[in-house]
Image (tube, rainbow, N blue to C red; front, side, top):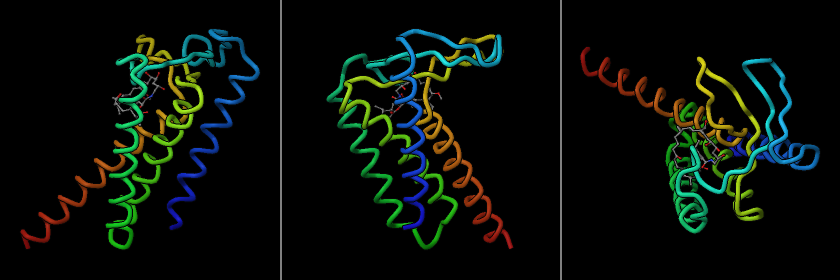
Length: 156
Ligand SMILES: CCC[C@@H]1OC(=O)[C@@H](C)C[C@H](C)CCCCC(=O)CCC[C@@H](CC)/C=C/C=C(\COC)CC[C@@H](O)[C@@H](O)C[C@H](O)CNC1=O
């Protein structure tokens, strides 16, 4: 149960930062934080990553509900056996719900984290996207570590 607190914290920070951007910045207004690397740019995206499937809200609702359903199912399954995996799932859940709230209320997602990584102007994203990406990578790493542990046991 305590993992859902992590989910709520991510949703809270995601919604707070989006609200601050929406209420205090003009659309497409940009504030350089670290010149040449990191800016806060008020942006909207009615699609998914890289603006794909723009405007397909019903598809996003269905996919997001499926993602949330799968995550909650696995969190119930593994809640006593894989604590670190639960952390990863709770982070993904926070990200998925954060963007889901935007899509329901605004039919688009508020983005504002504008970074230039190795000279590539990465798509502008938000806290929810960061949680989804970090959570997905974290879960993959935890599963790989668990696989190696199992192989190690079988080898002995
Ligand atoms: C992060 C998933 C995208 C997020 O998915 C969600 O909401 C989920 C819960 C529901 C979607 C309907 C389904 C996921 C589609 C998967 C996908 O798209 C492939 C993702 C690859 C990913 C590696 C894991 C790359 C990362 C990209 C970006 C994030 O970099 C940190 C750029 C984000 C910017 O394009 C920004 O405008 C996006 C905007 O905020 C809306 N966000 C979404 O749709």
